[in-house]
Length: 163
Image (tube, rainbow, N blue to C red):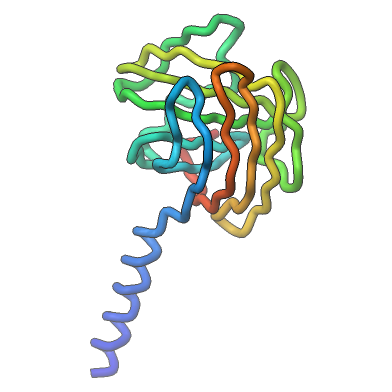
């Protein structure tokens, strides 16, 4: 009986931890799109999507998208995403300012259709985060000018595919 109870407890713990995606509560939209779907962080990136993408689907993320407003992604999915990237090789705890083309932090809003993406570069804003093991807890306020803005808070899990 004791072995069965211990086994059931372990299975319940693993099941609930595997299903926990945290939460994302972002207000606003960019180019009419919201991003309250799945979100992950890892390496120097924090990414919020409008879809149910899983960690393995985030290999399309780049550190920079160049000067054009169009880019070809390594993805066949269609989605909208907010990507925040730090100039260091890791997400940095505390508050970081978002600027258009330089350190410490950049942000892009991508609208992708089967790998072809258009994007908007953020004009200003900030992200304030705290790392708690595999979890990132924080808030953000990002302004894209006329395309729109996003603000809110989040608690999201790390993803090994974000490098």
